[in-house]
Image (cartoon, rainbow, N blue to C red; front, side, top):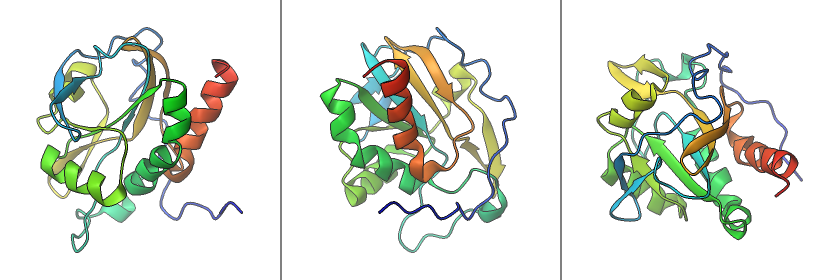
Length: 186
């Protein structure tokens, strides 16, 4: 039975921060460190891909950044990543590449990926080079900059559609799957 409790943290509003990521927008062709080793370029990815951008993941014993609980859309990276993990066989059966991307360094992401058993790569944009090139929306917390949560469905590195704001993140992988089934007949 599905859990339909309401998401306990504030919902983000559409501030139009991803409005420019419209159909055919080319994602930057930049090599980013990947948790599966080596590097990957979102912009050079051939075929269908899903890129979900998330702000930050915690770790056991690590406190959230100052004010995190009050920032709309900040919470939910772990359940969002788990959603894509749990549906990964559906995406893989349709040859859809899944990437997660954040500003965290690759070693931190690798530990997170190992803890959750993620079958897809997380990409590190630690210096926000990709975020700058794609003009991705951000927010500040505890003196640091974080990427706002968004997802882009891509074909050959170009945007087919985007989801922004993403809410609730714990059901987002299913939302993307339903969109792909309905709109792309997958």
